[in-house]
Length: 333
Image (cartoon, rainbow, N blue to C red):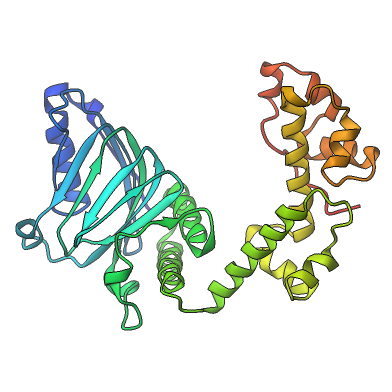
């Protein structure tokens, strides 16, 4: 089994917090110098563990900066790439004359064997990964054009990589050595495919993810059309219905379930919106592509546990009891 360790500045008094933080990131994330811009109230927390040959950390900290200089690199011959997923706050990354600002929902990757600066102007939370260079970079990738770039954690293969990183971190403590090695390899492959995707290299995985995004975009544009069907989506996206379902298998759903979930989510938002208070429930349902109020009510209750009428009438305390679907959305009519 793997274990997660925690380092928190709450363990020491305010005068010693920055020193503890500096020593911790020095040991765990590579030889780094850190400072807090003279802020005496610095606070930070770092949860970390090793997954196969990867190191995964969830880091939260107040305003601070870390620097890796050539003299520090000379003391550390470990050839890692560092990938950062921004969860909250914003961070400036600078390396090789390139500077990029990362916001929540984005990620970037940089080379620990080259000097860099990471500056957090406010409180941040990040998921940080250290991965051996050779697991990601090979002769078919030019790292100069791929490092310190802004990547999306919400679309493309990058979404899959970041989602797997987050899940792996949450489940790390329950992973045996063999499972950890397999997950480590999967994460590394997804990162590599993300970089290949940015480099314009078409891989089977990139093609599948590109098709998924095209399908979702088309559904989003036609979501309110009650005539939207699996056949229409397949024709528009130039693929068979079977392939449509295969594209969504990795998300643990079918395209029909995805379509109805999107419509139910849109309807739920309108039921919560004060600007829609004068619209009937039937009108809202029909505006989101439902053609039967009975079917809408049944599907809504199956997904959220209560009827649309009750959901609309409840106050904020009761509504907190039903913040998300409690069961899978219906596959169709």
